[in-house]
Length: 164
Image (tube, rainbow, N blue to C red):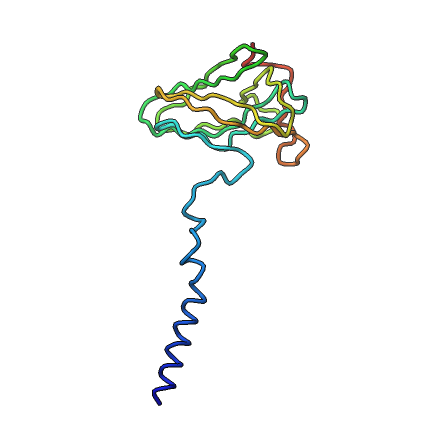
């Protein structure tokens, strides 16, 4: 009788360890923050930038896509800068207090941030500096082409808003 109890207890412990064993030695993936799309993210003390992507078909002019959430309680001027041909190219975007701003993903929209002189072919990474609230951070932003269906029509036209 005692052997049955010992075997049953050993079996119960074995099943418990077998079903929970991965969590005992493996870190939980859900505890690690990551960018869940093609783009990258940057946090600037109350201004959170998400899904940063540059769409370019020629490697010279790119459309910067982003979503910005301002939880700082004040209007924020987001400065965007990168190096082009040895010169710094910069511009800014206004993000109202306690609001969300996103560049438009719709084809033909005027709500875009166009970067001229990026000198980065699709598939590469463009280093862009973002400054807001006295905090500056750089990010390696992926440059993608509009050949993918989800980015169709998002390549920039010849109009350049931020250039040298």
